[in-house]
Structure formats: C-alpha cells, structure tokens
Image 1 (cartoon, rainbow, N blue to C red):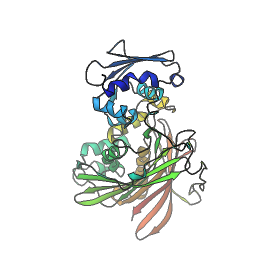
Image 2 (cartoon, rainbow, N blue to C red):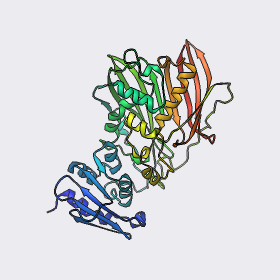
Image 3 (spheres, one colour):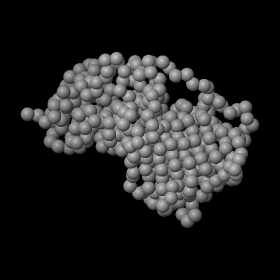
Image 4 (cartoon, rainbow, N blue to C red):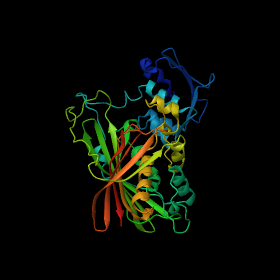
Length: 402
C-alpha cells in the first residue's frame, strides 16, 4: 500500500485546475530525497504524474520527506517552505505557478456555511518566541550600510562603532519564521504585507555584541479587508534591552470572501501629509538596480519577489520590489544626516507606515518637518514619495535626542 505521501503526490492530477494553468507547459521533477521521485507533466490543460524522473525538467523541486509530508497534511504551504529554505527549486516562477494550478487545500480547510473565512487564530495572542543569541558581526554591519548607500563613519568603526538604525531587524528573521511558518496561523503568508514598523532605540548595539532576540504576538485585529497581526519584539545586548520594535502585518482576505464584520468597508480619515508645516529637510536618492539584491543578501530577506524578476512579474508586479525596510533605512539615513549631525546614537525612535511598492530606478524624496520639541528631544514627521509624487512611506515619525 502506498504511504500517505505517495497518496498525496499521486492525487495531484485530481486537484489540478486547468483554468488556472492556462497554456502553461511544464515538466516538474519532484524530489523527496528518497527513492526515484516523481515527474509531474502539465500540458494542454491536463496533468499527469508518474514515478521516476522522465524528460528534461522545467524545474526540479526538492525537499526532505518530512517537508512534503507537512505539505500533504495541509500544515504548511509551498511558499512558506520555500521562504524558509526547506523547499528548494531550480526555478522559483515554476514553484509559484505550480501552487496556483493545484487546489491543495480543498480537503484540508473547511469554511463555515455562512461563507466567512476562518482568519487569523486568536490563540496566537500571547505566544512568545526566544531566538538563539547571535553576534553583530562587523562584516554584516558594513554590508548592510553599503546596501543602503550609507557611508556614516559610525558603522565602519570596529571599536566604538554602532549598527545602523534599521539593522536590528536582521536579527528577527528566526523569530518570524517560528511564529508565521512553523505553526498554523490561519493566515496565508502569500497574502501578507508588512504594513507598519516602529523601532525604539534604548541603548546602542555595537559590532561584536551578542544579541538576544525575542518576540511576542501582541494582538490580532479584524478589519474589513483582512486581519492585522501585531508582534512586539525585543533585542538585548550586553545584558540590557537595546531595541524595542513593533511590527504590524496585514493578511488580506481572499477575493470574494465575506467578512465577519458583514463585509462593510471600514472608513478611515485621510492620512495627513504634514506639508502644512515648514519643511526642515528634503533629500533625494535613486534606487539603483542592484539595491534589492544587495539588501536581500545583507538583511537575510530572501523572498524572491525582491530578487527574481520573473517571480515578481508572475505575482503581478512590473519588476522586483525594493524591501520596505530598505526604504525605511534610506529615510533613516536622511534623518540622521540632516537632523542628528550624522550621529545615529541620537536617534531615539523611527516609525513608518508602508504605503506602496518601490522599484529599481525610482527616485525617492524624503521630506521632514518638526512636530514638536520637548524634554530635550525633537519629534519629526516625515514622508517619502517617488518621482510621480506618490507617497511610498507615510505617517513617518522620528525622535532625535538633542
């Protein structure tokens, strides 16, 4: 009798959606790390699978048996497994199309008779994850500064230096992997967008420091078009809390699904541009073609939507996207130079809301103004717009120590 994994693989043709495949022709070799593997052939709106490796593959998809078993049980998705590195492929666009062409959840996820989608699990709230201590290596710090075009001397000093303001985000990847992809969240990471980021700097992290990351799910909020997940994070260095962060992720509801709120769109007040106040500084920067790849390598953000043009286009974008946190880092660079005497130690807080994608070749303009000054600190509002005047970062707030 075939094993459960074999049942899953051999049942793929019955889960095939010809309409979603269109005129796609592909030969996929599925490698479980054991035995002869499988060959999946898609052509002319039909699909067939057979044991062994046959024909010249369009792509080879490789993963250990336990990875495929999680997929078969509906405990994981191909996108999650790929982002973690548990599933590998010789062509990322083929993996994306493969998942779209098969209904891999129809027997695994049941929606209520009312048509409402399950949404994020409320049991996530309160869950805490602690990561292994990791060293802030000088080479990584320098690579991060180079990727964001930041030549501040404080990032290059091996003795009295400090890491760039947005660099602490790089320590949090293991935390997010555990919270979002190693358990059932009720959300689809393919429909997830990073909507807000808030960073508070309490003590410096220096090259060579051992950093201890941790994260806690603070809240799950229902909205008209999806669910919001708020994660609080903390980084400790030299025995004290160095950085606190709040990350807000938005999980879009599937197209056509009704909300528990009755499907009514929530009304929100327009975002203030702050332009009624006198401009304190303005700086332009061009997003070079290599910036998304350099930032991916320096930050550890390996999502192919930032590095693989074909993958990005298959997801509906005209080109790869610049990472939102890279845009945030560019804004932070402008603020430190213009308002903190190029001394990142004076930056106490950096907060943004991500409004729209940024692409290579875009010209970004950061504009800042004074919101208030008190207790030896200056609160600055800022926004970032592209060459068409469309804002890509909004609701920006930076607090600078005098």
